[in-house]
Length: 175
Image (cartoon, rainbow, N blue to C red; front, side):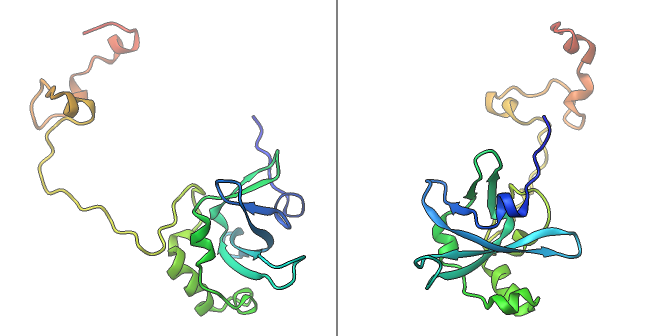
């Protein structure tokens, strides 16, 4: 299946943003592209007001949006309350690459929210902590074997896949 690319004019600008429940959150007014990697990084969203007057403008990571080109639907990938509580930034300064304004957003959403990569990555709001490393020796088996209690029949220091007959597995034969 051929991927459909998004047009800024037809699929992004002036599109309404909805949360996962379908509630209208705001409208995309602009987005900022990082000149180093040519990727969109920041979305400027208008929220509230009547006919575009008296509303707020919020900046959020572009990767928080999910686009459906067939329906022109734009969804937030995080809770709308999180976006609504984002710090206010001076958009003219942000557009001018003011490091303090960008730092406000990075501190709130987490610096990884503005990195290029998998758009499905989560935004941690700077609260990410690495999982604790277990300092116990590897027991030589994992996954379902751990659940069922079936230990490998090979030596503890060897890899269980070393004893696997892949030709039998490939043809559906039991060992």
